[in-house]
Image 1 (tube, rainbow, N blue to C red):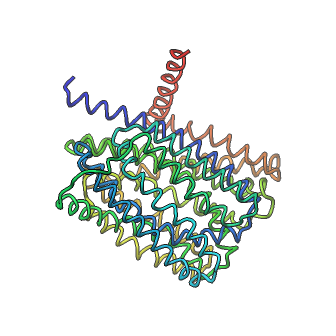
Image 2 (image 1 turned 180 degrees about the vertical axis):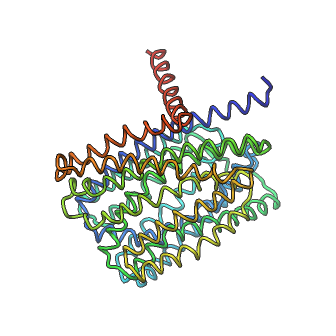
Image 3 (image 1 turned 135 degrees about the vertical axis):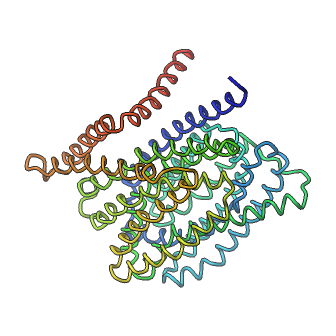
Length: 499
């Protein structure tokens, strides 16, 4: 085996191991988030969810400035990263402080815009976390460059658990919407300290003006891209804040938070694993494309059934847990759970663009998506209120992300049928599996008992979906089984050796 082949094989193994670590973390986080949602739905009112949803329209957009795109540019300089660390650290810190001050200034205007004075304190509380989290930007990049995904999984899991536990405690103490805001700076500080202990950044050193121009030049495009993404992510709340009551915004926020978890956790983690490998394969376009296709296919077949099952369980599940209190959120959970999974693969193709340094092309797509999203959501809100917004958001994710993914992949010689498989085969299998479960649950034998309906839908889906994979996509079924089976065997062997 040549050195080059051995190196590529090592990267592939690291990426596979990283995916499995972060997949386990995603499942754990999904469980933690679900349990947290149960507690918070009982402790807080829909108005509290609506208020924090409006506050996040300001803080999420501002937080897209935290790293100024420096993390992705720095990761491109893996071999000479130590020469770039001091400049990247101070640039990231400076921009984050400016972002925090900008949120302080924007808070009163947002409160006036949404007719909600409580937003001032909420926005300021969340804003404090911005520079605290930015201090860990370089450390996180160093860990990603080392492909130590086990540590990243542990760090991410801690962050999720800490945020949820603190939020529940504060909600139980009667802090209302502040239960969401106060944990942000606390957890950001602890996370930064942990990352510094693992990979402290070099903050002293000289740098050349050309380095600053390089970071600013490439980071500016990434910044524009991320800012467009955040404006899109918050666009539905911006529109709802103008046309709906806080309670209705709260129902939608609850539904979106519930529906988006599988997509953001699975897609986000897979893209974090794949990106460093794609950077290392920059001079091997065929290997790079193959890695992207494998990741897209695997993600498509995993995220679609999760989301569709969520839609199938929404009505009996929410009624079982909360009675009639959160039933107005059910239609939004169903609609968003069906539309959002079509966004997952764009996280991988977006990572491919970044690895190829196609920042300008990525910005072009975002600049098209930005007005498209607001036109669709604005028209949906005008004609159909909150329901119209939910339908417009689902329609946007069903259409635009697959189009951009196809345009990116076709440039690498990937056929339209291959791209279509990532979306429509998992969708068809999921519809058949969940549809069979719902049909059986609605029979006179089971209908009317929420718990039994949930069990029937879940059991039938877990039987039928893998069976469909095994029959019609046996190679995909074997890959999923082998990946998780190999990891489980290695874990048992390690535990046996340690014992």
